[in-house]
Length: 214
Image (cartoon, rainbow, N blue to C red; front, side, top):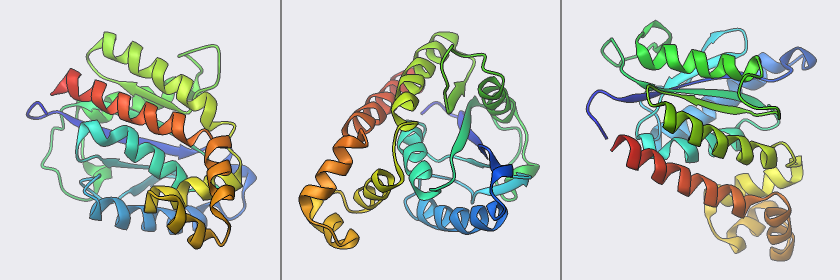
């Protein structure tokens, strides 16, 4: 990756006021996500709640951002996320707490998540947006994410459960044992939850990011 280029992720909870336990649930899920994603070297800093139901981090490797987003959505179930990603420079030394850092990547991540809230990207609902100084990249990656999110919005809780277990194990038999169901049930839930389409999109989006910023 180009020196001095980082990805900042800002996320918030959709319809958070409809859940009375949202702050407690968010804290529990974020703690698990931070431990997991730091161990996997997907993020540079723990997720930090910055305001209300909003949280942010700096990711580790740019090409891994699409995979990180999918795993984050799975880990934070049943909470549904809006996610803005800004790709650019960071003005400060990268150290916690993340909410005291500044720079272009943070400004672009804010712009990205606001574009989702204001419905400025497309005439259909999206959950994810990227912003960088490369407008051709922005147009392409946001279309990919928009189509990806069309599938994400249709996934049921049971299907997310199968996806989450499969993401941790990567094979059907251990996933089935973890969920205490048969292999055919796991396979069916992955297929109906569009897992294979999502996985392919994640791989291609990661390669596109690497080609653009590598």
